[in-house]
Length: 84
Image (cartoon, rainbow, N blue to C red; front, side, top):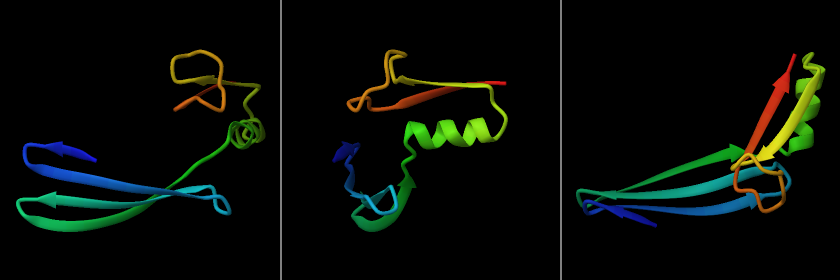
């Protein structure tokens, strides 16, 4: 939940393991009005991205965590570097 200047944003997340999608139910309260904005984001694993990039002609693909360190299960973000 995020509150800023009297506005409110609430996200409820659910990971759909069958589709690898992060499904979000977003509720926005602004000026006393409530809006519901559902959306989803496809979550790719490093091996999926690596294989797609290699198939596209890249010669080397490396993955890192958000801070540039090793990519681990605890990494909050993934950085992928591909070289032609």
